Length: 378
Ligand SMILES: *Cc1c(COP(=O)(O)O)cnc(C)c1O
Image 1 (cartoon, rainbow, N blue to C red):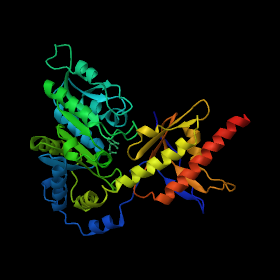
Image 2: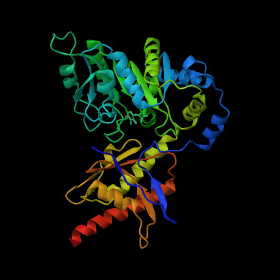
Image 3: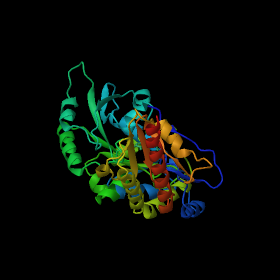
Image 4: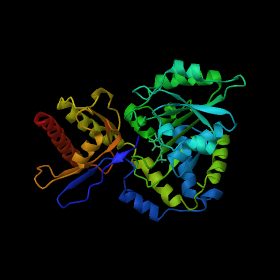
């Protein structure tokens, strides 16, 4: 399904609250400063001291032997698939709401020649462990592909920023070990899971053969993701990075922002989580039948609002949220996203202040009332 956003043509006196996603953030002023003076070298040669330091710290944070700094999360997932599924006739298991399946242009199939075996995601981002057992194919007969990898997503993006329960991860790891199939964690927003659960990244990733997180998602860096795993895995990942054109040179300039993010941007994610909860609570308190949020499942910085599409579509709501007319009392343009016609998605990030949140709530309530009154009229 297309990801719809509506852009607002700026008018004076209108406050724009852009919560389409957490990748739109600019580097913090402190980041600009450390970037300006970062020590650099050719990182493909392993000679960029800032990149080396970032990789060392991330490996330590995740409790893994080594790490590699990559341009994007998509490349982390693709490289992991290419390393584990390096024989023809292999497949990987992933959730049907996973980013890897939905939003990476089928790179696993196109570039790695690997088939994806989909298991339906539960609303909490997990999938059935019984189905995993049924689906894993090892020592297969000559008709079947063999399963070489399982991918999990934490937090789960399209399930609304859910943190995977540790017990589920532990049970999955037991099954994976039994069949000798590695697990790769797409932890684009793993730090949000750490902050929400209070469980260390190291513990969450304990049984993962590899794991990455994005410095560009919620942590304010202009780019970059760090893929962590065993030494032998990272060596292969670095070879593939070069093949895919991801070997960037004096990238310490940007890695410097990553180092700062590790120190300054992780703990503050709680603020974004609190902001999401405030918005969710405001929507919930309206007791609308048209706009619904599941307050009990709000966990991190992503909020999914379900719509009754018999009354209004996501596209219409996005337009209403974004537009401000001269007569409106609330002069706020809320920029949101819509992963499907029945869902509005809001993602909080560091540039959104508590005051912005109050304004966004005023606007959302205004739009909800407007939609409600439109049905009464029609
Ligand atoms: C954004 C995202 C990715 C991809 O990261 P990019 O840096 O945008 O390529 C992968 N997985 C999840 C869960 C994501 O949210």
